Every structure is written in C-alpha cells, then in structure tokens.
Length: 85
Image (cartoon, rainbow, N blue to C red):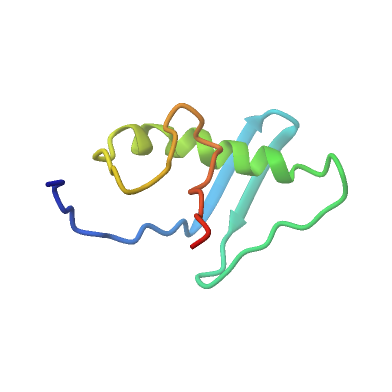
C-alpha cells in the first residue's frame, strides 16, 4: 500500500532573471489563472521555461516518490504523461 501525501498547490507569481543565457534582465509577472508565452523564434520562451525548470529542480528532487505518476525526475523538463483510457 502506498502512502498518501497531502496535495498542496504551488503557483509561480513571477520570475526574475538576470544574466541568464541571452536575457540580461527580465521581471515577468504571471497571471494567477494562466500565462502563455508567445513570441518569435529565439525570443527567449524556452530560456524562461528552462530557468523555471532549473529553479524547480531542487524542489522536484525533494518530492516524495509517487508511484501512480509517470514523472521522470532525471529530466525536469518532462511533463506528467497523461494516459489514454
């Protein structure tokens, strides 16, 4: 029997980047409901996502093992895999 852990929501309110890859300085607030990154190629969308993934890397490493989730901690850019019924 697997342990059940309380579920808590984590939301990012904003991100601030300084001297990260091609971004010299950026303060980006997130909408509480939904934030969509839209831009031309090489505009920095992936850089922002990579910065978030790196920042959350230490958080993800401390999460308890969830046997009912297909989540690979070795690749913090991989999302939860949704299974077809």
